[in-house]
Amino acid sequence: MIGCLFGEFLGCLCSINQLLSGSHYLLFIIYNLYIYQLFYSFISKSGAKKKMQKLGEFKLPQFFNYPPYFTLQPVRDTREKQIQLWKELIIDYCKTQKIFVIGLEEDFPLFSNPAIERSLSHEAREAFLSTLVSDGRAEWIDKGHRKCLILWHRIQDWADLILHFVRENGLEDSVMTVEEIRSGTESRGTELHGMDRTILMRALKLLENKGKLALFKGTSADDEGVKFSL
Image 1 (cartoon, rainbow, N blue to C red):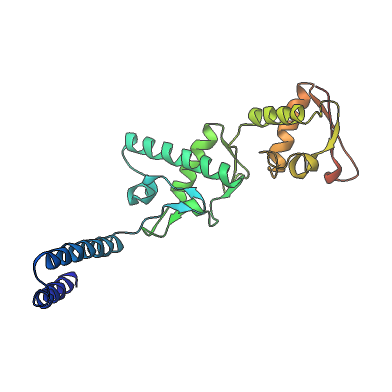
Image 2: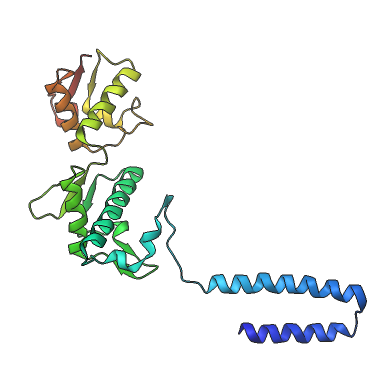
């Protein structure tokens, strides 16, 4: 198709050659060759293989567009590199999107790339998440390994963020409900806002064991309170 278009382009030049001469014709040739080069570049790029560059505002790494990375590699060294790349991707994506739970049998965005028609097998999904569990960056929620709790901050790190939040807002001797910490106006704009309740409670209990706060129950789960003592 491009060859036909180029032939028509030369035909037009020959016709115009009869109307223009000298410097005008030379400028006309240079201009049209430039236009054709741009056109050829556009055609070439449009025919190139499509790639997924982003998921929403999240920029995907290059390996996400290489089919072999969607299949567990048999060679040990290659598999270790593959697993490391996937671990970093899962943690980064969950952190930026504030995702705390991944279901292995659910439609999680990272598990497939429609641009290259590849999807992770159940075995690969479990292998990558199991390695995160071994690293202390995730925990299986159920014995069947169907859902995984992602700890893009470890529990100790979440506890440190809570202490920072308390000091930043002058709440050292204050009382708050658990829900206020994770969804109140004070936590808005922080990493605590919208955090998983299970992770929050574990971080709070860790701080309670260290004498930094006291947990007390209200009339319902939503009324659970926290008395800070820093």
